[in-house]
Length: 229
Image 1 (cartoon, rainbow, N blue to C red):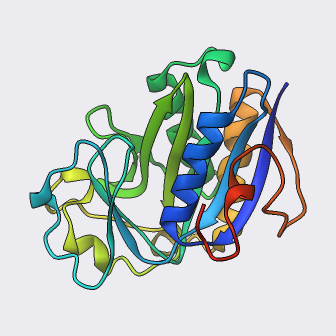
Image 2 (image 1 turned 30 degrees about the horizontal axis):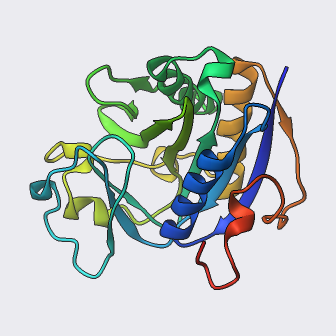
């Protein structure tokens, strides 16, 4: 089994967490254990490397952050479970497409546990239920290692998705666990996705006490109390 260290960050602003993922990836060594960060963000739009300005219809008072993952624009906000995977793909023998599929399958397995059939789409990474998107995915791979990950809509205000073309698709419907009758809190949903991912990919989750956000190698511990790396 491969170790996967779990960090539970709670609700944190987007940009400091993103910068911490970059720092972790840039300073990790070949023996550094892989990590998964569970987090929830205040409202923010993030535009990927392939993002086109016309897909942001009306950001309004929600910040728009240009980031270094693949894909187009998406929304993060309270009530959404975000799981960031900081994994040495070369060491695990996983290609990028296989890794994206592994994340998708973890969400699909969680939904199946609750009697909901979901599917991935070859042309648009993510997880869909009856054509409506319930989870978005985006990765960056640097030095053979991944960061960013997936965002699962749990019980959130979906209205901000109408201000964008989600993932570059005009009029793409979105949904959430609560709209499908699945009542979970954000933390429980994130843990469940991570559990399915680890079981399928042969990872052994290394648990940490909740609230212990500052240990480990060169990543989250580099953020000060003021929220800057």
